[in-house]
Structures are given as C-alpha cells and as structure tokens.
Length: 270
Image (cartoon, rainbow, N blue to C red; front, side, top):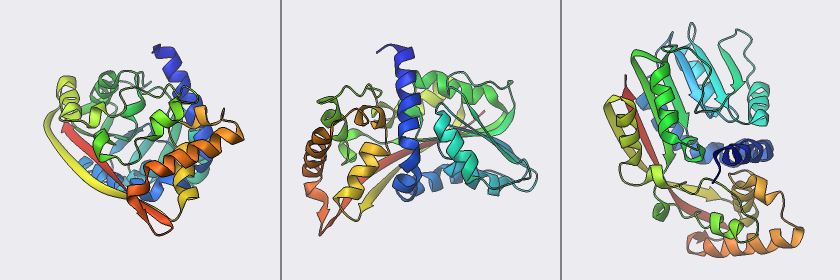
C-alpha cells in the first residue's frame, strides 16, 4: 500500500472515529494504559511525549504523574483527535499541550524528553520501526520509552472486523496490524532502535459489552475502520453488524459479550 495513502487513511479515519472513540474504548484500554504507565516509571518534573495520543487518555494521566513541574506533549495524526484532546483537558497551567504530527516525523529536537509513550498507536504507522526510532531520538540519555500494541490475532476475539469491512469497502487499515503483537516483534523493534534494558509484558484482557449495539459501535464507528464504515449504506451496516456479532457468538453472555483481547507492552531505556 502507498505510504501517503495509508497516512491519509489513518488521518481521516481517526477524524471520523473521534466523536465516539473515548466512550467506546476508555474502559477497554485501561489495563494497557495502566501497564504502560507503570513500565514508563514517570517521575515528577519529567518532560513527556505521548505519541498517537488520540483524545488524550494517557496524556492526562501522565500529566498527573509528572506534576507539578513536569510537562506532557501529546501528538496525533488526526486533527479531530487533537481537537477532542484539547477540549477534554481543563488545565490552565500549561503543563499539557497537543499538536498534530506524524509519528514517523516528530518536530522536536533530539533529546527533548525524559520519557516517551505510545499507547495502541504503532499498529497504524506506515513504518513502525521508524516511529520507535523517533522515540529513541527524542529521549535524553537515560530516558525511558514505553509502547503498547494489540497482541497476536488469535488472542483478539474482535479481529474479524477487518475482513468483514474489507469485503464491502477496502479499509486500507495497516495490513500488518497484528504483526507487532506477535512473538517478540515489538521487543525487536525497540532493540533495533537502540534501546537497552528492554522489558516485555503480555497482558490478557476482556472487552465487556452490554449488548450488540455497544459492541458494534466500538469497532465500526469508534475504531480503525471508521473511514471505510462511513461509506457503508444503511443496508451494508445492518449486514456487517449481523456478520460481526455472529463472529462474537462464542463470547455471548446473556444480552452482552465478553470478548477476549491481548495487549503487548514493551519498555526500554536510552
């Protein structure tokens, strides 16, 4: 896939997903965010970079950890995600700011930060190795980086969303979505970028949905296929929802669903 096209798909796809992203995913991603921040070992006074920050879920938590003298900068390729993040952050002391940037070309000087974070964003980057290299470049000596990705496909019960959408409208979501969560791929990316003292944590989780409508909204409207889904006709939406819920049948619990998932979190030091 053409790199520029993939970046456009990510930018405008997440623009579409921004309005319902936080309500759809905040609770589900919390275990990964907890582990990410624990491994990042943020300290008061740290200057922190949060790449692919989305609506700022991790950014805001990081700001609380580095207060009162620290600072956090959140970046994302989506203008609407950045706008949502700015609306959600009510601080007036200048400790948090947001900017639209590409994770592969971050506009900061070398060694600008004590810590760098990327929560569930590297799967969408054209060249994840280059993005991890940017995290390394921007850290001061002794700085810490931590990244979380979704785990291997077989451990993510919601994975059928991709072929279901692609059968109707080509989504152009990164075809290697699950690659970084398979085996030691993310660990190797950190090592290749120059990180040492690398730690890897694999975390099993469950995505809890009260009903089928909630399950469908999260993955279709609030997730990575948002751009393709916006092109669905009403009939296509009904058919795709039905097919997706059929794929979740093994995880049905009464009216709701308990869908398995897996996160991989890797941290390293410069």
